[in-house]
Structures are given as structure tokens and as C-alpha cells.
Length: 192
Image 1 (cartoon, helix red, strand yellow):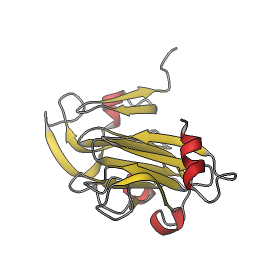
Image 2: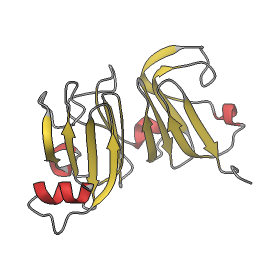
Image 3: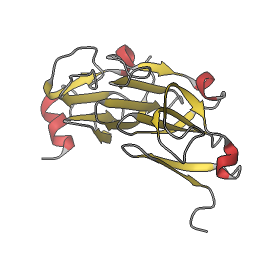
């Protein structure tokens, strides 16, 4: 069964709604549609479905951009453990689920002012951390950070902090990824 057939079975606008992105966390799934809405289903013990409730959902249900994402269109989703995040076409970041300081039962919006006045273009979630890439090529991190990526060897931050660009030899970063307790960033010269 495809995500499209799952959505078609459970949405009123099945003929007009196409799945554009999908993310899977610990026993839950998020699906972004071409119109910028989100459907979620699965375990919701920490609010990771983004609907504001503590109830598990066993079939896809709509989490509309008008009600939950300040009417902004979702273009990217990520999930891990019990934490979820979305980037919008307008360059905002929304986070929700389990992670003290950055998680909520309802999606919480962080605009470009939180990221040096640069729009968010990419996000990834690890088990206890989040990494963000902005249009200016800056990398921001939050959560439990391990040795090698930041100055103190292992620390827990509850607000996004800029990774010193000198750690990347002042190169523009174009791609990021986040594992359970580690992160990766690739610069614009990768593969040359």
C-alpha cells in the first residue's frame, strides 16, 4: 500500500491531494501534501503527531496549515524518536513533540529572526537534537550535542545556537543530517 493510497482512503479531497514528503519517527508517520498541509498517524505519547492531543491516531488525520502552521505551506518534514519538525515555503521552522525546550504538543514556530535573519531551508532531527540549515549557509543546533561538533564536549542546550562558521573553514554549508547523537554538514565544495 502506498502513502498516496492511504491518504486517498482517508481524505475528502483525495483526487486533489498528493503526498510530497514523508517522515517516520518512533511508531509514527508524517506526510506533507502538495497544498502544504500535513497528515499524521501513529503513536502520540509526546505530542509528536502535532495535533495538540495526547491520543494515538491509527489512521491519517489532517493537521492543517491554517490551524497549526500559521497558514504557511510545509515543504519539508523530519521525525525521530518522539520529535518532529517542518520547514515551510516561507522559511519558518516548526518543532513539536518530545524535547524539553524545543518540543510542544502543538507545532511551535521559529521564524528567520531566530536564525540570524536567514530563512530555514533544511532541518533534521536526531534522537535528542535538531540541526538547521539556513539560506545563508549557517548551521544552527539545539538539544544534546556530542563531542566534535561544538565547543563543550557534551552539553544540552534548550535554544538554537549558531555553529561557529570557522568550524567549517568559513565554507557555505549546503546539506545537513542528524543521527541519534551526532550530526553532519556538507559544504558547497563536496564532491569536487
